[in-house]
Length: 86
Image (cartoon, rainbow, N blue to C red):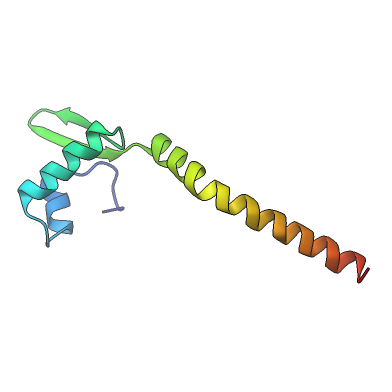
């Protein structure tokens, strides 16, 4: 799915064989409504694209709070190792 930007319903359905075509359509509709997927019509085709901005915002919001604590711990560890025992 990552080889080309924009996927049709048929190509997504092929990549997700455990889901029915209707199931893929429903999931795409929910993702589009949430703003995580945008679509573009070109004639009879409809291509679906990931919307990277809100996905990055979600990652920053959810992962960022955990990364900050880890970064602080690593910085403190480095400082302790560089200065030696107290």
